[in-house]
Image (cartoon, rainbow, N blue to C red; front, top):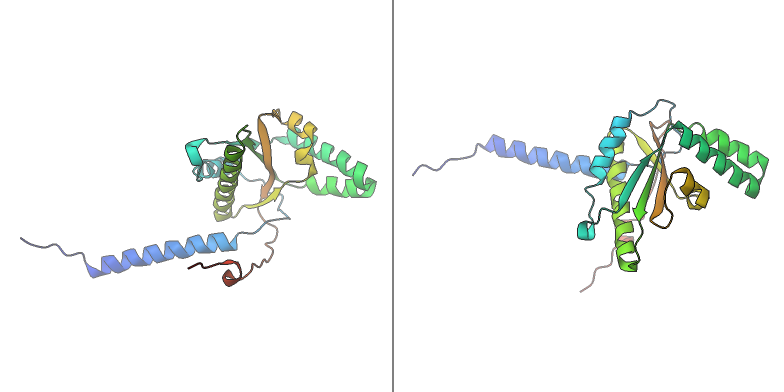
Length: 203
């Protein structure tokens, strides 16, 4: 019986593709940065929907799929900016409030992610973790499209009026984050501890 042989060049090709894919994934993860300054150019909403489609494949115990993605339009964004300006003015005064209002008004894209609440504390913890995994999926996909994100959990996201503006039942959902997205004006540098500092090997 004849034994079919796979050409060596095909195997080398396949190994090269696998190694290149591995390197691309590594560079994508280690190269992603939180973006603070965005270009005014808007991001096509279809790209955000594609990112959400990728996000939903995150690890999720019991497949509860507890995440909700709120794409914010101009009216909702304006209302959130006004609310945050009011909160900042009450806490830090007019100058800080005006500066924050100007800064927030320049953000090109807004998204809010929430997690289903649960009376079961363990399930709630697992679902919140799953939402964070989904968000990482989303941010990495967007980064691969040269779209940067800033994940915010500021005071405005915990204000009951924020939930009202988004028509969210505070008893049913928890805000995991408010996300600004857009094309980066600049990409900041970052550093992490060495692997040896955070790894514990047990016998």
